[in-house]
Image 1: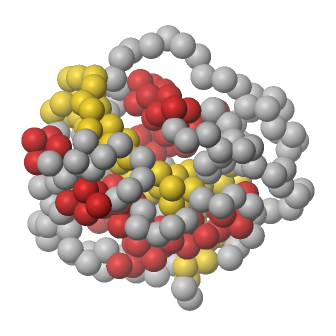
Image 2 (image 1 turned 60 degrees about the horizontal axis):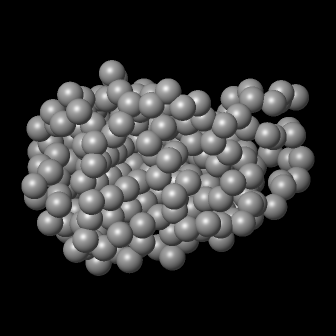
Length: 255
C-alpha cells in the first residue's frame, strides 16, 4: 500500500525489440506522463544519476506519471552498448532512440494517455529530441543538451513546446549556438553557477521543470489505472532559474 505523499516507484521491464530494458515507473493522474532519458551509457549514464532521479521525484510529486529506464547494455537491461569510449561526437543513437520509443509506448499503454513529455539529460537530450519527432510526444524538456557533440538544429522545426535548462558552466553546451537552434515557443533557462552535474542546483532544477509543465497546454486528468502492473510491452526566451522555497504539491494517489 502506498500512503498519501509517499514516493514509491515500481520496477518494470520495458520491451524494446527483442530485448528487455530495466525501468522504474511511478503512477500519477496528471497529464502529461513523462519519460526520462539518461546520459551517455559509456560515461556511466543510467536512470539513477542524480539529475534523472531528482527530476523523476519532482515530476512524480507534482502528480505526473514517470518512467525512467536504462538503455540497452546498461545495468540490468539486456543487449549491449555499441558506443566506444572516447569516440568524440555523438554518432549513431538509433538503438537508444528505439529504447526511448519503447518506453514511450509502454507509458502510453500504462496511463492510457494520448501523448507524453520526453525529458532528456545530456546525451539523453539528443535521444529525447530525436524521439520528439513522433506524434506521441507533445512537449520536450532538455537538460544540458551537449551542442558541441550533437546537432540540435532540428528543434527549429519542432512545432511543440520546448523547455531547455543549461548550466552556466557547461563546456559541452554552447548557449549562443543553441539560441539559434530554438524555434517558436521554446524557453531557454540558465542555471547560475552550475556545471553539467547540477549537484548544487538539483531542487531548483526540479521545481522549475515542474513549473514549466504547469504552464503548458492544459490537459484532462488521466483515467485511473487498473490495479495491475504496468504492461511489459525562431522565438525563445532566456531566463535565470529563480530560487524558491515554494513546496511542491503532495501526490493524491490510491495505490
